[in-house]
Length: 313
Image 1 (cartoon, rainbow, N blue to C red):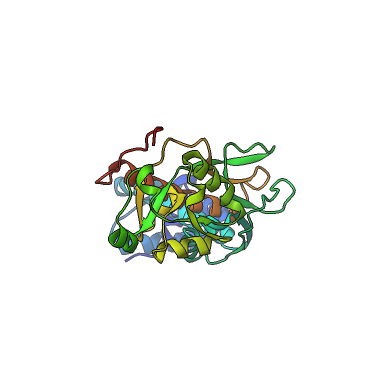
Image 2 (image 1 turned 135 degrees about the vertical axis):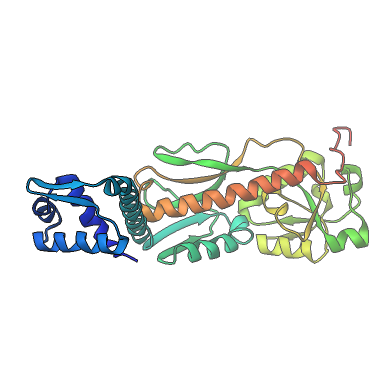
């Protein structure tokens, strides 16, 4: 095997035509360049240059290997750039704000994998349902449920729809059956609540179907609501993005229509090219988008599919 570093000297001589000029480019002595080229020729068993009084000229063998040597140099430079990029990305604090409903369901696994991919990035997680002002620097990255971001200077994309449907646990369905219409749903206890972040939207869903009186228990947190549903207490309306990615939950009714609201991944334009923020945005964007596609696929293909509720019901 030859010394990879000898290729640098071979390329420098091929491009400059002399060991003296190559030594100046590489900031080494002319003797060192000549020795490195000779070592490479000996290792390969080929004469790469014709030594002439006017300088070094490539032999046919040298011409044939020149392109390969250039490709090795380019690959080495790319590797160095990638390593430097990883080093730049692998440090610093990123303040992430996300509502409790996502913070306690899908996010823990994603953040675990983010840490494994970028161990130098520290996450400060704010799971308050209060909207943080990214423009004022209250957070660096937001996962936000909204119709359309309106604040100036925000950049990002919608990663999922915010459709809602009724869900129960598998154990509840086995014990009490799974309702497939609003008429049947009225005969089952509902679990309400979920905290300020989702209750307003959840209550609007209940009012749409006249189901407010069917709420048998009200929890003031997402954890409480999910715990009650999974324990088999009753049925709850939940975001499809969350529930379709939870193997313990079964959909009773499909979403009535596509919601205007969506789940957005956002940062401020002044931070969009900061390496640590870019790394978090890219990672979250990829994982959230994959979960959204999984949810949409299940909504479209799961059998048996219950019929959509009718207005008369």
